[in-house]
Image 1 (tube, rainbow, N blue to C red):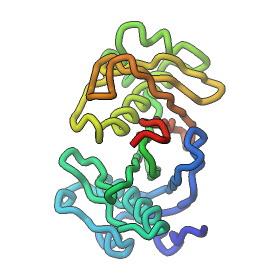
Image 2: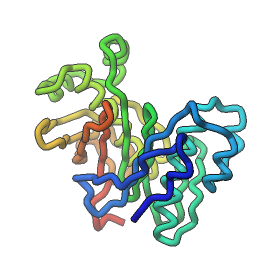
Image 3: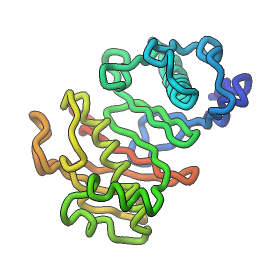
Image 4: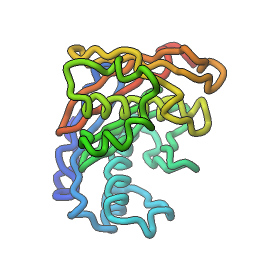
Length: 236
């Protein structure tokens, strides 16, 4: 269906459905947003509630929140659901009861989608950044699983994004933070855009060490988008 975003330009542009190859039944939207065009009045104009926690936030943070929550509003409204998605104690999105979704934003792009899954969008790391963060992201032997067609900095960005997606997917079950070393990239299919990530630590009942999750990745707008299905389709 047409997305009513033209009147919100130049702040919000190119709102459109986003196909997710690993989750064909999942509804997802993406958009571009321009931090330079942000104004506080846009919250009321776009029908998004601004939380008190953003009162003193910088324009970049407000822009990210507004763009992503607006996409949530469109997705929810299409299904006749309450359209406001607030934030929890750890800034996680609070979806209507019985629904689970994910949002992500990076470098002027926002994505929102529904399902039991995690979603993350990351800009490619520089060589300097990769050198500084590699030890905090990868565990022993994990670099071998990332060997392939991509330069290491991009492969590391993929691993970082995949672990962020895993965290977003499992947080509702775990109920707290867990570090990057809780999981490892086990395999990557660079051609098909798929990967396997495996838990190294037991995080909660049903999320024991050794459990693996299949994920997918897609290169868009000079960034990498990762998606992880957290549960089997018939899992409660």
